[in-house]
Structures are given as structure tokens and as C-alpha cells.
Image (cartoon, rainbow, N blue to C red; front, top):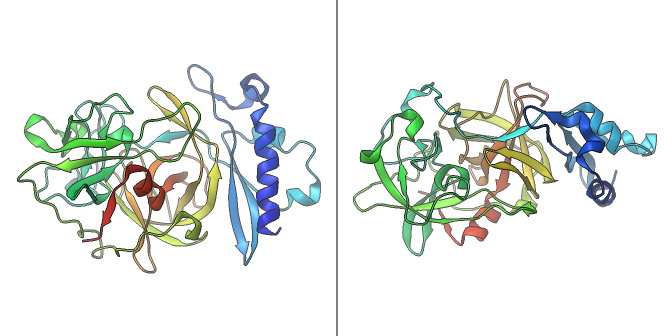
Length: 329
């Protein structure tokens, strides 16, 4: 269908979702506490000016509920995927060090992909570097550097994270900014920490060399684009963008479920694109090494290649929300 028609259908079904109550969609009750993960809706462009409506659900029964009464012809223009529950990609408590081991050890100078975390968090990933008020800072997720809103500005950031043996002697930065989670819709899961005096960094040390200085606007992110990332747990992986403008992504955190709009969906090529501990990774476009998005969550099932799907926020949105500037190298 025409992309504007896909957006209209997305808006119509989003309005339908607004009237739902969790018991009505009990097919998606999962795990202890019967958490309900509502469908997420986005766009999967299939040609110039054309797109399918992307529907992502925890269980197939939820798609049937959402599409009840929708014309059969319209259903042919819908891309439904069962992805199970989506969770923040922080390292599980007590997780042992896993390959790639060099990203989980103590490394100086700091570089993208390394294990980092707030002292009360297990481990996530140092995604890249930004300037905050002229000072060099690391970029990652709120749930990695700011303990999902539980931290205070001025708290320490460790490299490696506690799950990888980091302790007081491994302090490398000070938490200086994060976007708090809202009970309604969120745009980003992001935080920054200014490097402590005497801590050196190599901002351009990505696999294959530095990324470009150009940050792609969210409206310019194309589906089926080949992308890459380097993260604490799965290292350097490749994938492709499978949906954009994804709204209503419900993500399980330790303290509850938060919902995100305007997200990018990625699936891995030949396996999972990300896993727990990869949160905070910066995703770049393979064609020109332009940074695109900040990884923060994923599922364990779904995706044409298996291994689940990954969700990330457009990097332009992240930088705008935090008021920082990207450092290419």
C-alpha cells in the first residue's frame, strides 16, 4: 500500500489499542505477574513510496485480536511477526564473562563496545563518545549508566561493569545526564557520563575504523539497510533494518514495563544481532559507516533469521534529547 495509507492504518489500529484492557488480551500474559506486552506498530517499506504495516506481538493470538474486522485485502499488506516479550539488553545478574572476552576486561584507553555500568548495574555497553558542554563523555543507556532512574547525577561509572569484575578501582566516568523514563510514551533510553580526569579514550576504535561525523536523522533511516554494531556480549555483528517508525514497543525492565515510540527494528544476519549486555551499543550503516541508532532492547524469538529482533532509538533523537554532540574520532 502507499506509505501514507500504511500510516493511516497504523493510526487506526493504534487508536483501537488505546481502548484495550490487558485482560482482553490475556493471550500475551507471560511469566510471573502475568505481564501483558501489547502489540507494537511500525512500517516496513517494500518499495518506493510503498510500505507494509509492521505488527510485532508477544503471541500470535494478539495479532488476531488486533486485526479482527480488518479487510482480507488489507491483511495482505500487513507484516506480522511474533517476537515474544522484549527486554532491556542488560547483562543478567551473575552472568559469567562470555566471548568476546576482550570487551569484558579492563581496557584503557576506553573505546566503543566495552563493558561499562553504574556500580549497581550488572553490565552494558559503551556505545560511543559525545561532547557535553565541551567535555568528552561516553554514551550508553539510562538502564546501564543510571540504573533505570535509580542513580543520581555525580554517581560513578565503572569499566568493566560489575558483572565483569569491575569495582571501585575501575571508576572511569561521572554520570552527568540521563533521560528519565515516563509512565506514558518514551523516545529514548539514554544517558551520558563525562570521563574522569586522566582517563583517555579512543572514539574512533570501532571494527573497521572510525564512524563518520554525519548522524542520520530518524526520517532518513531506510528499511533493509545493512547495519553493524559492537557490543559487550556478542561483539561485532551484522544485521538489517526490518521496520521503522515502530510505536508502542513495550520493554520489560526490572522495575516494570515502559513503552517507546519511533523506534527502529533490526534482525541479525545468520543469528542474533544482540543479546543481554549489548545495551548501549551504537548501530552504524555498513555502506558509509554513518551512526544510526542506540541499541537498548530486544527479544529472543522472531525475525526471519532466528535469534529474535533488536530495538534501537534513532541516534539523532538521542543526541537531541540529551543535548550532546557526536564525536566521530
